[in-house]
Length: 93
Image (cartoon, rainbow, N blue to C red):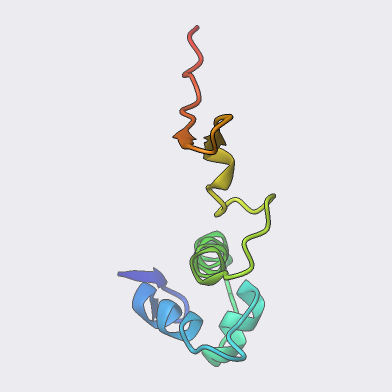
């Protein structure tokens, strides 16, 4: 799927750039530079930012407690150490 019509960039091209491993782009601007272009009209910037953020969350190995990718906050431990999944209640209006 084309996500940047100004530069004719596909989602697959952006994702491949984000999979490069060591030295992979850490921002949308770096991603564009790796692809040899820059945003023109700007409509694609939010999509590229979202892909960069998702790639970094998916590849993170640090496991910080405040990280949105960390699901350890969804687990509660009982007195005997058994893990219990905590499901947040849905807000009712």
